[in-house]
Image (cartoon, rainbow, N blue to C red; front, top):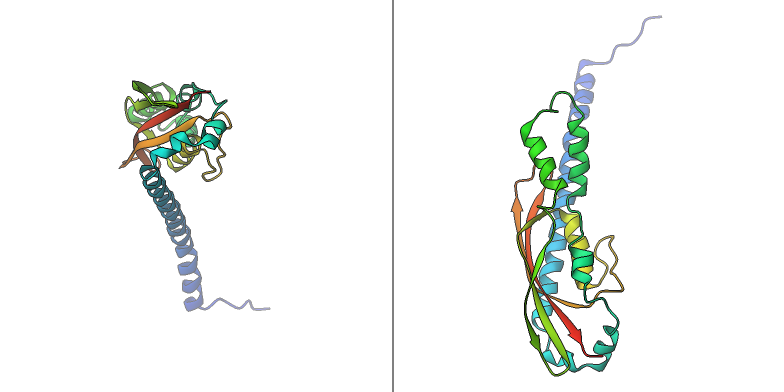
Length: 208
């Protein structure tokens, strides 16, 4: 029995569809990532604006003082300065390093060393303490910028803002923290999209 051959026009159509699918999925992935990033940045702008408009009468709010009465004064050093950033990229680099073709690539080794050490960890210096009638404020300034991805930004904001951001939940030990500055600058990532982050945080401690 003679087999029917597929018409050349239909065969070309199938090949075009198959060839277009990877491009379609790549463009869809890029669009989703850009949308996620923009939503996060919009949320951040709104958060900082809201903080800048807060009235200083909040200091004298009894409910506020009660809420933060038993929080951890060393929260920044325990929760923020211990964060390991760009974990996803670190894992991808470890996989790439196992390849015999790029095992000796100097740029890869340098990047691995940067992510595995303490150079890309948050460190803060505390400024002069300001005292008020019912509380004191300390300004913590990040000593050097760090590289972060969208997930890192979400986690940091959740820890500082005390609310759910993306999949990350706030900590109960969080003291009263206010973002004084939160600067993001897009960098050329080694493998993925990264940002340079620098921030200042005001920690407010109430009299018990």
